[in-house]
Structure formats: structure tokens, C-alpha cells
Image 1 (cartoon, rainbow, N blue to C red):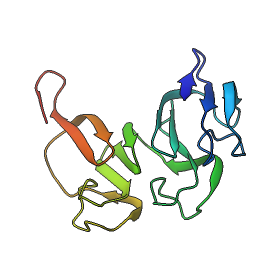
Image 2 (cartoon, rainbow, N blue to C red):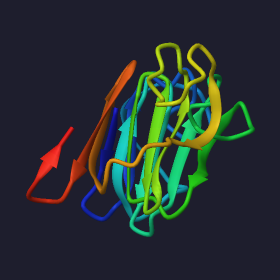
Image 3 (cartoon, rainbow, N blue to C red):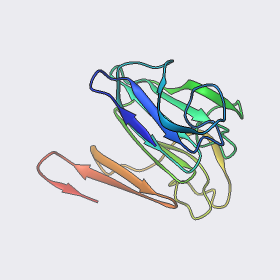
Image 4 (cartoon, helix red, strand yellow):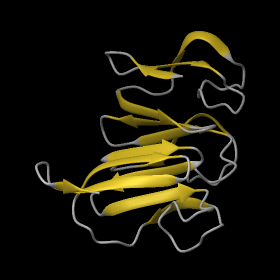
Amino acid sequence: MLGITYDGNVKAWGNNFCGQHGNGHKVCCDVPTDIVKIKNIVKVKGGTTHSLFLDNNGNLYGCEENGYGQLSHKEKELLTPTLVATNVLDFATAGLITFVVKQDGVYSCGTNYYGELGHKENGENIGFLNKINFNLGKVVGITCGGSHAIIVVGDEKNTSS
């Protein structure tokens, strides 16, 4: 579990077998524990074995074992929050996939068994943030499940998905 305090700090508790708490180890915590390496966090999300944290400057950090490339990092073990992307407007993650919204489009990485990343390489893991080639308009929302993604496009008043 992940939570954000009113002052932008992050607490984590529960299963930590893959280091997804970001506190430097893989020991489970039965009470909320501070993740001290990151501050000013405005959004947190967790996948199956990884966690992502967005700060108020658009920096996206992630932690866990990174076995499927879902953190877009060359290292396979990230036990403390590590910078994944900059200039991030929004992000979504679930299962073993990650989506990042930037000014110039949407990027994705992780498992791509069913084409859920929006790239033609079905069945192949994509271990780096790869821009999805579509031009649907302004992205105003994004979410995902274990093997699918929903991107909402339009403006604040008129949206479609």
C-alpha cells in the first residue's frame, strides 16, 4: 500500500517482496513507513511489483525489481526511488505496464503480451519508455488495468475514449 501525506511525503506498508516500497530493502512493513528519498509527491500508483511517484516538478520516480522493463530503466533492481522520466504531466500503471503522459504524447513500457502498450511488438517486453504513435488530440486522462489501457482525449469539456 502507498499513501501521500498532506505535505507531499510518501508512506508505504504491506508486501515489499520486490522492493516496491522504495526504502532500500525487501522486508514487509505492517505499519506505514516513510519513504525518505522523495519529497513533494502529488501522485502515487502501484503495479503488481513496482511503485511510481510523481513530484510537483514533473519528475517520475520508480522502484522494484524491474524484471519486465516496467520502470524504463537499465538496472534490474531499484530498491530506492530512481528517476524514470522528467516533464511528466500524468502517468498510469497496473500489472507490469507503465504509461507516461508528456506534452508531446504518451509513452509506455513493460509487458506487451496483448498489445496493451500500443506498439506493434505484441508478446515482447519493452524496457524503455517508447512513444505511442497516434494522433488523437490532447490527452486529458489516462488509466490502465493489468493488460489494457484507456486514454481519454479531447478538452476538459468534451472528451472521448
